[in-house]
Image 1 (cartoon, rainbow, N blue to C red):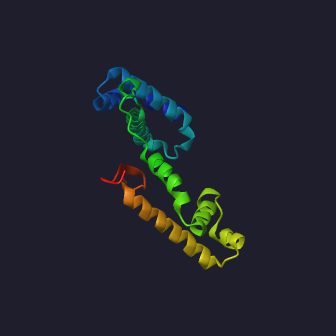
Image 2 (spheres, helix red, strand yellow):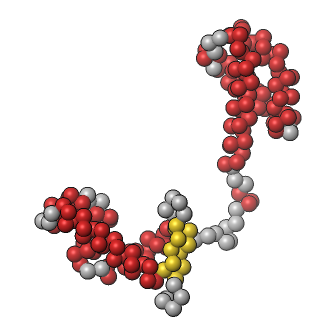
Image 3 (cartoon, rainbow, N blue to C red):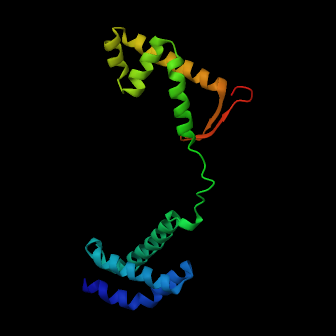
Length: 176
């Protein structure tokens, strides 16, 4: 602990300058250096080689600066939110349309999809419940999904991002 106290006080102004060059705000630089001191004191037990203390302190300083910018990028100023022009939740749009179209499927496909998707039955449990083979249950669920997709494609233009979130959901011209 004493091995750390001397370098910290010696580096205080140097660290402030180091941080200031990156954040361009002296008050913020002082706050970050203060946070660095707290981290150095709390993590002093992790330092194995005391001759490497300078590099260790600078690494903590760099990480603290990065953490500051990371937090800053996640914070949202409430006055910047546009409540008037809020974009619709397209996932809910598609979900609502699916619920409307599900009853239009032939009964054996509708029941298979309702049990697996809405009641969270596995396809094996579906097979047991309906008294059909496992491969028959799998086929029935796949066919039901395909039928639903085809019906959706007839009336909607749907585009998704790489994560599967719906980013476009509009009625096809001439359909609705």
